Amino acid sequence: MGRKPPHLSDIEAARYPPPPPPTFHAPQPRLWFPWLVPLIFLANIAMFVYTMYLNDCPAYLNQDACLFSQYLGRFSFQPFRENPLLGPAIRTLRVQGALEKDLVVDQNEVWRFFSCMFLHAGVVHLLANMFSLLFIGVRLEKEFGFLKIGVLYILSGFGGSLMSILDLQQSGTSHTVSVGASGALFGLLGAMLSELLTNWSIYANKVLCNMQYWKTWNVSLRTNFNATCLLQCAALTSLLIIIGLNLAVGFLPHVDNSAHIGGFLAGFFLGFILLMRPQYGYVNRKYIPPGYDIKRKSKYKFYQYFFLVVSLIILLVGFAYGLATLYIGKPQEKFSFLQSYPR
Image (cartoon, rainbow, N blue to C red; front, side, top):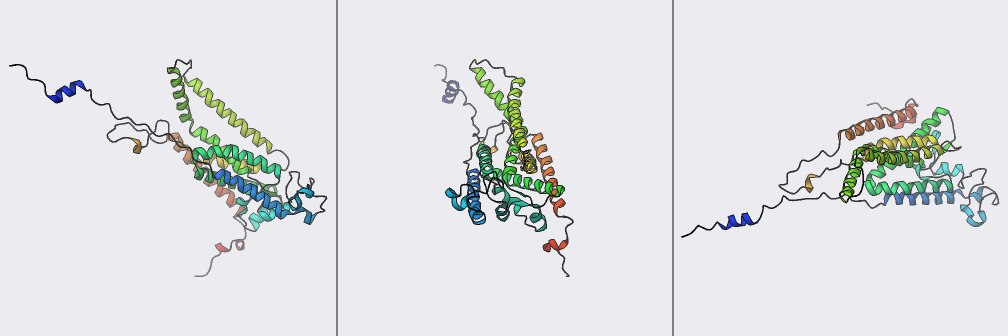
């Protein structure tokens, strides 16, 4: 009697288009809660207060010779002629763990490589370092986490201490102590520089993406390579100026610039190892919905792997060479644990 009506599934198929493919959004990198850097800050403050307590200037000198003795008592500072930075005597720093070549090399007190990072020569020295620690360290810990920044801080400080001892040994200077967190802080600066270099393409892509976004809103921007390079070069130049100014301070009298340079170099190479970011557009497999076909990028670029391997080799060779220069050739009785016994 008439045409047969189409099947229900045919009607539904004609009325409703096929569903779009599933969409997903990779989660944004989360920021870490910074607790390690503030803890290091408090440890340095507490260590300085304890050092001043042990120093007890009025017990060794005339009370009138100690600075602010009437207000601070045993916490008063040494005379300006002895310590112009408002701090303790050298004897106290040496007891507390200051870096000294004779004690580290001849007496095998290797713990001084690390203990000196938590000692400071005076209030001026302490405030300058702690301001830099909070300004640089908190930002890095938020982005990369406490573990990476903790390893970076300790190994950079060790690199600064090692370079300082090597410089003292080469100059033949004895009974000179070195204290301060400057080596570790310069390591953080060096890591910021290498982080910018190894993640250069990531920042370039982010800048271009932001420019394209504003262009869709009819904002007049030139989205080209020159504009991107200009922004990144400006950030790099600013960082280099900050590093240069800090290194220039090391040429002042009584400043251990060798520790600054050693810490900076150690941190610079550690940054290529610890602070690599996945390349722009990388998505972890666990964030891709089932059945969704996507061309995944490798997590890191080739040049990032290259920098990592080269930096790791340089660090291992540098640390090994420095320690070998200090300790190889010493009499065997200095290392009782290396003596051979009859079997």
